[in-house]
Image (cartoon, rainbow over all chains, first blue to last red; front, side, top):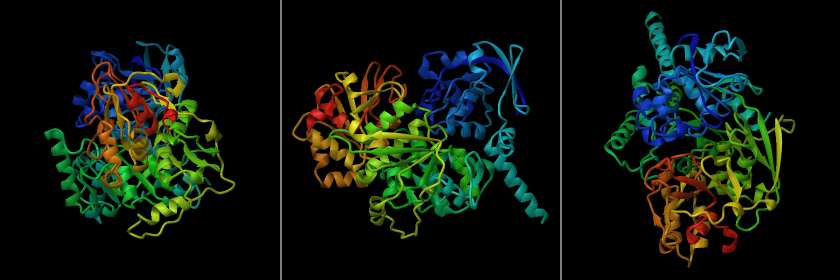
Length: 172
Length: 417
């Protein structure tokens, strides 16, 4: 995962729930591409395709509320979206995003001043967002949590840990 | 400390914790439902071959059960094979019912437990004083292997309930009122504790609805502190006779917020499309035409819920323009309803009864066409959740549902007692 993420913004409102992000009927899939094809399809035909021309989703309060489905984070990545910035996230989505390797940032200050199509730059390591000549700060994640995100998600993190254990067992 | 603080400190081997702190906690139980195959595939992907403790796993195949397509059949087969390969004793197949209800009925949930699972409505375990919360399938794999996960200690909110419900008003109405008042993120990341002189009179079934619906305010977990009713419920079910220690908050526990509700002042409530927080008193939506009525879900398909609906439907007829779909929460509930004649009443009134499970709430049968309206006793009315993106879902108590099925439109149940 890169520490600097730059791109064009698409703007959502409050309470975007995980049923809208990816309907339950597609939970039979777990791969990014397939899930990405159906992401946000409840919002109308072609809505998901439109989102593909944006890089970063910006949302209001409680993004990802509802179901604990991990595929909500996977589907967003399947659209080619590189990060989500929201005023706040629902807790299950927050965890799933980290575990899925999707960078997420809580930054309420950005929301009122950013518009669709604006370009923003997120510096995850520094906890800063650059937008229209202004700088917004956000609290950095705890190191232990950021480590999971940096490795690309929890599965990669687990794989690395298991490899490390196996290595130590051989050495020991 | 609050209940959540006490349970998280006990499960992370600490003497005390404070809100905002991150701890490494060891859950007593990891529930996975139809998503089990996904967690099993992650296990393969990361190259793990051992579970931390097979006795801490519980698997219930509840969504889309029995399989309705070959893909679901293959996924369920993978889940069964996983359970067999790793010796998971707490395995319940597609006939059992909704995971949450099945696990509580089977005595796998006790006060003070920490339970995580692949379902946001794991909060329901708080009705028995356990800390339940939802996680994704990859994280379930991680807990299977390592036995632990990071958890942030939540701040707590205290909700005090006084008085008694008037006739025709239930804990579902209370929760819709609270969600409407506090908002879909009104208790985001928080732990909610219910107190007040109304609690002793509330049945365990009513408490389950409370802890279940609390999720729709964004909670991490919710608790009804265990009392005599809890002990009675557990006595009949904790078959493995494992010792448990109810966890109560200290008198000097710190709460972020205090909310007071007088139950006597509540009236039947309905959540309107397409967000649960979009609630209205029954009077404002009565008369709204419905095509389907769904009596099901982990929120309101318990035996008591079926009894309430049957009480109203007995000797009456479902409106010819309405499909009443009844999906009992579990096989045990279905058997009880069969033996007591409740199922017969529901069928005779014009309803249909499906096998137990998540049913239409998870998009399994009972799908809605363009322009159709469903009144449901479930916990979510999100856009397109039950089919077409041009359909609408309203949420209510089982009593309001039964009255509305008769009228063919959303109706106040208080005229039916």
